[in-house]
Amino acid sequence: MTAITASARTVSATASATPGKTRNRVLWTLQILFGLFFILASGLPKLVGQHDAVEAFRTIGWGEWFRYFTGVVEVSGGIGLLVPRLSGPAAAGLSITTVLASLTQIFLLDAPALAPFPLILAVMFAWIAYERRASFSTFTNLIKH
Image 1: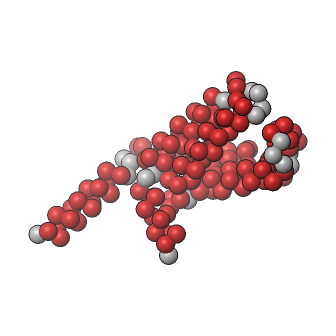
Image 2 (image 1 turned 90 degrees about the vertical axis):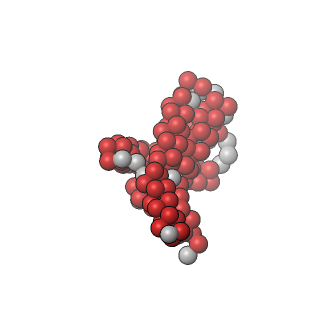
């Protein structure tokens, strides 16, 4: 009887950690759009040395390595959003990345008017990470093995 109760609790906990059908569709739509955005429009320009990206990172003053690092983080996060097992951790990482981007806009680039957009993205990514929280246990199992 104990095994049945424990297994029922596990099923109940798993069911409550997964979104419903409509919410799941909304999440996947956002994840695909944000994933493509971070791969194609945000990360790749940094990696290929697009003029605007080079100038922005020159203004930051941390060297070319930081532009490449940021590009890799953004492309990796975008890809992670598209992989079910990685979607939660990727969203959490992009949430942190976009908060840091907002702080960079305010303090290093003297462009506080541009800071709200990354903060809105941070909130969206935090929501995706919360909704995809079941993928965190899958992710940790992948790391352990």
